[in-house]
Image 1 (cartoon, rainbow, N blue to C red):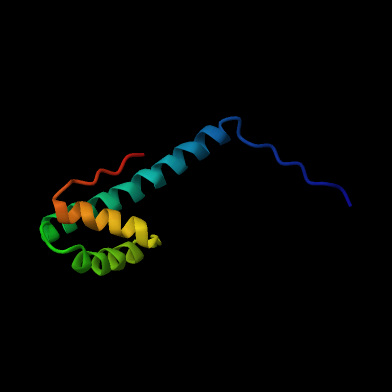
Image 2 (cartoon, rainbow, N blue to C red):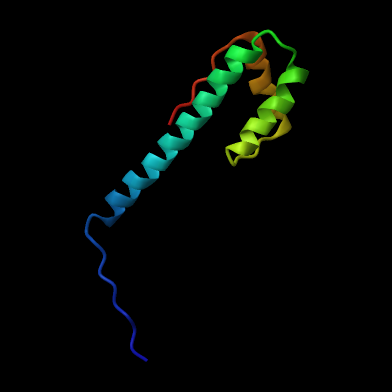
Length: 87
């Protein structure tokens, strides 16, 4: 059985990186909107109130988060510190 030869576009890797970066930017934008919204609504609230809400939003975006990370973000939201997503 003869092997199949595939010739890739010479710009394949560059094009793939552009697609990946686009997906990363889209995801970061979604999380930024979530953080901004929660910060407006929950600044000054106890961390214990924010954590379950934040976990639910995080899951809806398709992610998972550890309890220490959740506590850190909830604390920042409670304190009124803006969380900024960077890519």
